[in-house]
Length: 350
Length: 247
View 1 (cartoon, rainbow over the protein chains, first blue to last red):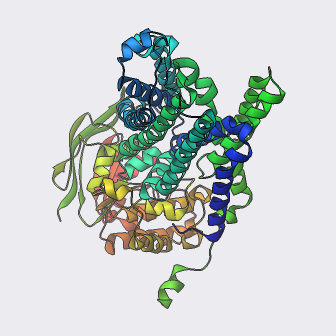
View 2 (cartoon, each protein chain N blue to C red):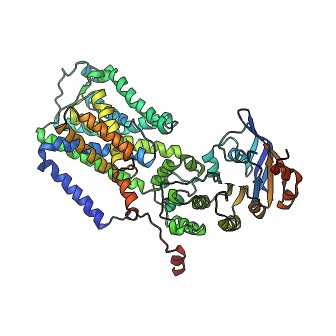
View 3 (tube, helix red, strand yellow):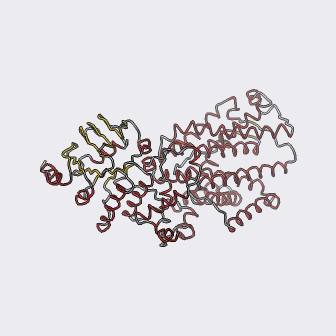
C-alpha cells in the first residue's frame, strides 16, 4: 500500500497535534487521555462489527479481563493477592520506579495474551450464533463477567482492587498515561489498516457480506472469525491493563466491565463515524467523546438523555455514518466508478 | 468416460416431505451434464446434498472416488467442487475486483498466506476473467450495485477464479436477458473446453440445456425419471408427461 503525500501530511498533522496537545491543553489532559481509549475502542469494535459484520456488544469483556489479569500479575509479583484484596486497601503498596514499570509491562503483556486465550475459548461458544443472537450472546458474556468477578473474593469481589500509584510527579504520571494510550491507539490503527489490505481483510469482508457464500467458496470462516475476535481482544487487553493503572482503582461494574459507559459507546462511535471504513471509527470516537464531554459540562443531569438521543438518532437515521454518507455522496473519491478503458488495450499494448 | 461424481441411492426428506428418493446418477468427467425436472422435483435438494449443505438420509456420494457425503460445504469446496446459487450470491459491499480476489482457491492457504497480499498474477487473472464475462469496465463498482444478470455473471467469474474441477450451476440463465443468454451458453461451453471444468447444470430453459449438455438427467416427484442424450430426453414420453403434468 503506497502512501501519498496528502496522507503523509494528514498523519504528520495528527501526530504533531497529538504530541503537543497534552502540553498546550494541560487542563484537559484527562479528557484527551480517555479520547485515545475511545479511539482504540472504536477501532477494535469495527474490526468485528464493521469489517466482519459480527456486531459484538460484549467487547468490553476483554477490556475488563485485561484490567483484572494485569492487576493480579502486578500485585502478585510482590504480595499474596488474596491477602492483599482481603485487607481492603489496608496494605499500602510502595513500589520503586523499577518495580512499578516492570509490573506494568509484564502485567500488560500477560493481559494481552490472556485476552487472546479467552477470545479463542469463547469463540467456540459465540460463533455458533449469528445476527442479533450473536449481539445478545456477547452482551451476556460481558454482563455475566461483571457479576462473576463481583462475587469473586480472590480479586476483591465488588470492592475491587487498589493499584499502585505512578511513582513520580502527578503531572508526569498524567502525561505518561496520555502517551501510553496514544501509542496503543496508534498501534491498533496501523495494525488494522495493514490487516484490511491483506487477503485476511478481504476474507472478513466476504464473511460480512455473505457468510454462506464464503463457506461455499471454501473460505475457512471459523478461522478468520476466531482470529479477528482474538486480535480485537489483544488490543483491548492492553488498553484494559493501562486503564486500570491509569485509574489506580478497579472494580467490576463501573470500571472494568462498564457496559453502559464504555461497552455500548464502542458500537455508537463506529456507527457514527461510519462502520466498515478505516477512518470512520476514529472520527466517530472523537465526535462522540467531544459531545459526551460537552453534555457533561453544559447539560449536567441530562447528559445520559442527550447521549441516549444521540444513539437513537444514529441508529435510526444515520446508520451508514459520516464516512458511509460521504462514500454515497462522492463515490469517485473512494474509487467507485465505471472505467471504460479495457484490459484488452493494456494487454495488446504489452 | 470416468465419473467425477457418483451418486448412489441417495434419499433426503425434510420432515414428512420426501425431496429425493433413491437417486443414482453419474456426472462424467470433463463433460457437461444437465439436470432437469419440473418445479419441486428435487433438483436443488440433490445439489445441496452433493455439496454438503445438509446431510443425506441414506445413500452414497463420491467425488473422484472419495466418499464426501459426510463432509461439510467448505471442505468439499476446497476439494474442488463448487456451486453457484439459484438466488445469486456475491459479496455486495465489495467491488468486483475484490470479489474476484477473495475467490482464489483456499485449498492450500496456510496461516502465512492469509496475512499476505494478492499476487500480480492473481490480479491479472481476476481482470482477465472479468473481461471474459464482460464486466471489466465495472470492476471498481460495488458488486451489490450491479444488475441481477451482471451479478450472475460475476458469480460465474468468481467460480472460475477458484479453479474448481467441477462446477454445479443452479439455473445459470434464470433472470438473464434473453439476448445475453447465447453469450452465456458460449461462455459456459468455453469454461468446459478451455478451462477443463466439468459442469453439472440445473436448467429450466429447455433450449439452453438441450444446446449445452451432452447427457441429461430428468427428475420428477423426487425420483430419477429418465436419462439420456438431449435427443432421447426430448422424445421421452415420461419426460413430456412430467412437464405437462400428466402424473
